[in-house]
Length: 102
Image (cartoon, rainbow, N blue to C red):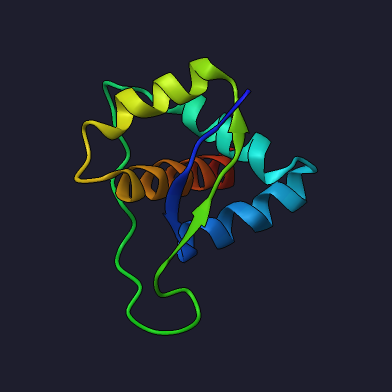
């Protein structure tokens, strides 16, 4: 296992935190599932910008993940402006996917 040091929007992190609690998994596992669920041929779009409230900004995260998951994230993130946008889009899309599949 290796640490993935990246930033994520507070908005996406908040959604992930709530969904991880509901699902009974750790945030690290949730981030891993989100990355592994992402299709390189159909990349998620970044959520809309948060302009007010407590969810403005980003925060650092450093989940310990399998090397294959980190490699996948690095491949995905090359297709985005930066890794923060990539991680935020991936996690937000996974949360939305779980919301619609219930």
